[in-house]
Amino acid sequence: MPMPAMPSLVPPRPPLQVVLVRPQIPPNTGNVARTCAVTGSHLHLVGPIRFSLDEKSLLRAGLDYWASLSPQVHAGWPEFEARALRGQIEKLHLFTGSAACSVFDARFSPGDFLVFGSEQAGLPPALLDAYPDRCVGIPLVPGQRSLNLATAVGIGVYEALRSCR
Picture (tube, helix red, strand yellow):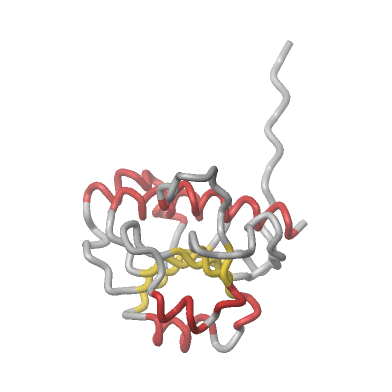
């Protein structure tokens, strides 16, 4: 008996916006790029970025999916706010381990910005303090501290896609 075909994903319009703030590990960024490509999401990289976008491990993790992406690179958060966010605070979702709101309770809409911090430090405290009502977290069992960045992005993107339907 043949296997049924996997259903296709129709990305929301406008597409989701995945934002990595100060990414540090090239393979994680490559994996996030791959998630963005397969979900039709846009990728924003907010500096400072501690590696080259031509780095071999970044490209290897993203495989041939880089060809379908045009990541926007921003020197820092102020530039991102001015060029991409443009005052749309209601579309902002800051992923942090210290959020009171679960990703499963958050309301997502097409075009939302899903913002993730660096692998070691997370999002800057000043950013979390500036938008405390825009923070969401991924629930973990007690005693565990974090997920891998690429895994967290995958969970966030697919939950946002599910709730946009």
